[in-house]
Length: 510
Ligand SMILES: *[C@@H]1O[C@H](CO)[C@@H](O)[C@H](O)[C@H]1NC(C)=O
Ligand SMILES: *[C@@H]1O[C@H](CO)[C@@H](O)[C@H](O)[C@H]1NC(C)=O
Ligand SMILES: *[C@@H]1O[C@H](CO)[C@@H](O)[C@H](O)[C@H]1NC(C)=O
Ligand SMILES: *[C@@H]1O[C@H](CO)[C@@H](O)[C@H](O)[C@H]1NC(C)=O
Ligand SMILES: *[C@@H]1O[C@H](CO)[C@@H](O)[C@H](O)[C@H]1NC(C)=O
Ligand SMILES: *[C@@H]1O[C@H](CO)[C@@H](O)[C@H](O)[C@H]1NC(C)=O
Ligand SMILES: *[C@@H]1O[C@H](CO)[C@@H](O)[C@H](O)[C@H]1NC(C)=O
Ligand SMILES: *[C@@H]1O[C@H](CO)[C@@H](O)[C@H](O)[C@H]1NC(C)=O
Ligand SMILES: *[C@@H]1O[C@H](CO)[C@@H](O)[C@H](O)[C@H]1NC(C)=O
Ligand SMILES: *[C@@H]1O[C@H](CO)[C@@H](O)[C@H](O)[C@H]1NC(C)=O
Ligand SMILES: *[C@@H]1O[C@H](CO)[C@@H](O)[C@H](O)[C@H]1NC(C)=O
Image 1 (cartoon, rainbow, N blue to C red):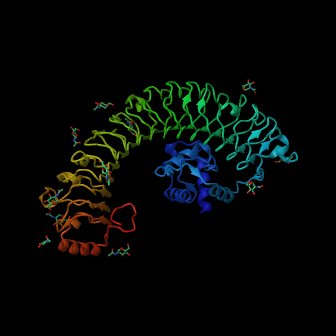
Image 2: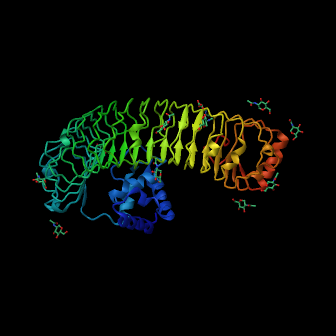
Image 3: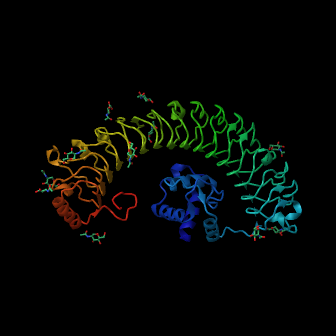
């Protein structure tokens, strides 16, 4: 792991802090690459948030960075060893950290044998014990404590007021306990708490004012509980909240005003719940929303007004719902995911750059007059006609496998920026470019997939149209054996990899 590069990231973070997403976007490619490497090494691909995620990066940057880097992986957690390595590399272990893993069960003042040194302890890690009770005086001496980890214990309740002495506490993690109610996690007025992790407990409801005294709270993680009932004023007072994670609960209904006071909210994750309907005024007052994640619910409709007013919205995830139609043409969003719904029509917004809508029933694609789309993924739909898509001259990647395409339109050559084109599993039989009025070549194309069609021959000069092709997938076609033999030799001559056997995502490798 490149220490110097990490150092640079910290510097970068410090320079820009507090950061906006736009400030990070032009992050230097080599720094980005290094971050991606760290991410691959250390982040687990899980719907889980350990609460220790990139502790070294200032909060303002942390999530945005994570979001950019882990977009595809939906990475939310850093494994403990990874974190330790990073912290060690950064010299973040300030000596004031106390870790106690001794199968502690009941936490009383005297079970923390620190001989008065606790006054300087800033981090206390009591995770992975068997603590089921915490007495009121347990944390009496820890007046400088900033971080408290109680993950993986058996807490079902704590004495009321247990956190009262911890006026400097910024970070509390109660991941994976048996908490059933939020009552025992009450904080005193003017609490300093910025991050609260309650992931993987058994909380079923959030009553009025559940987090009332947490005016500095930035991140609230309630994923993987059994939340069903949220009071309209459950989040009252959370005027600094930026990240609210409610994924993997049993939420059916959100009261209309529930996010009303969350003026700073930027990331909202409601994935994997049971919502069928969302009030069109639910996000009134949440002008800073940057990403709204609603995948894996049961939404059948989403009123166009719900998200249209959000000028900072960059990402909307609606995968695996039951949307029959969704007109998002007024959205400001750049990235939209609508995979596995029941859409028959795709009508996208002018500022979208990435759209994924695989596994719908899309027949029609309505393209706005100005368009910035660079990545369109519409595999497994019912598209027959590529006509409208060929007007999107900004496209660099088009995935349109498993549709009903039998022909390429004559102006297909207008997609001059295409670098990846997946036409596999369609009904293509013939490509007779010779009849096209324009002599064309797609000079950017390097990955072309026409496997799973009905080709027996290709035009003799086929490869001339794609002078920079590197990968070509042609398996699962009824090739004429003579043609295939000579074509394969042409490919070898041009250094084109056929049916890349090293690519596990294609069906030519088996
Ligand atoms: C904690 O308990 C487990 C099982 O009960 C045991 O394997 C482990 O050695 C104990 N750890 C300590 C530090 O006592
Ligand atoms: C706490 O830390 C300060 C300096 O950081 C030091 O002067 C003081 O002696 C420490 N107190 C204890 C009880 O260790
Ligand atoms: C909380 O802060 C306010 C304003 O700073 C102050 O008036 C109030 O007394 C504080 N409350 C407590 C319990 O410290
Ligand atoms: C979609 O919404 C836009 C305005 O946001 C409107 O102009 C357009 O007519 C709508 N399309 C359909 C098919 O309703
Ligand atoms: C599209 O982006 C441009 C420039 O980034 C911006 O001025 C415009 O308001 C955006 N339009 C919408 C509908 O988001
Ligand atoms: C192409 O777009 C036009 C209008 O923009 C629409 O009427 C037509 O149905 C679209 N065709 C396809 C195949 O998407
Ligand atoms: C092709 O698309 C249909 C729906 O249009 C889907 O049911 C099927 O599983 C897809 N096949 C593959 C191989 O993706
Ligand atoms: C098309 O252009 C290529 C080079 O770009 C050239 O070799 C070929 O002869 C041209 N074909 C026709 C029919 O003009
Ligand atoms: C496949 O191509 C052959 C001719 O090469 C044609 O007879 C047949 O109808 C085609 N099948 C489909 C499903 O398009
Ligand atoms: C394959 O194509 C060649 C011409 O390219 C033709 O002579 C031959 O008959 C074809 N073979 C079969 C089995 O169709
Ligand atoms: C073919 O590719 C290999 C490795 O990608 C490269 O070493 C070689 O120089 C290439 N040959 C030609 C003729 O481009």
